[in-house]
Length: 288
Image (tube, rainbow, N blue to C red):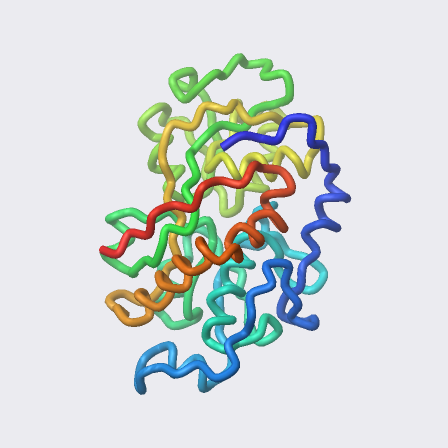
């Protein structure tokens, strides 16, 4: 994954590009996913219940440029568009989606407590999380990287340069666990945007999370930061749902697979993250 060279989008321009429909507008979507007119599902399944209710609650980030960012009419970004694709297959229009802000630390509780039906929030699939929730996907594969001040004054070229140095990330995230292998001097907060102040002030030398999130933060704060560009993990983004809801997981996986081939996944990417990042090859669904 790399930034498109020569493509400069200001924070204002990016915001206007990403001002997509959400829960309070007409429901039009740049990914143009057709809403199923009369979907039929087996009685008692989660799909049948959601289709009958005509609405779905989806947890997503509200502070992640390109993937899930709060806009005037609701959240916008690639994760939001993936949510619209799934809702459309259930016969649920975009304006019938209830978006709930979800941060890294509360994704599992929101799913297990029934506060949301699914979570699409730059949510890395891993074995520990699969003990608590189930995952569909992945629908995208990112890689953990480092965000530093423009010009890289501390000469951070990779995680190996962080020994003993202060780094900021989000509490409860995969990134927090991964960076602990390189430094014990970790400042953890609830959102990645809250890491930017400490980076500006020199309290930390880097912010670490997935490269696409860092790219969005750098783009939104033009001229202040840069991504080192040396991913050191693979982060498969999945869709979290209640554990062992096998039918629902299979339905979401089928929906994702179809979007990979019919062009709606690529359209969703190009209307959001694709304004800054090249269009990747869709990942392979893990039907565990």
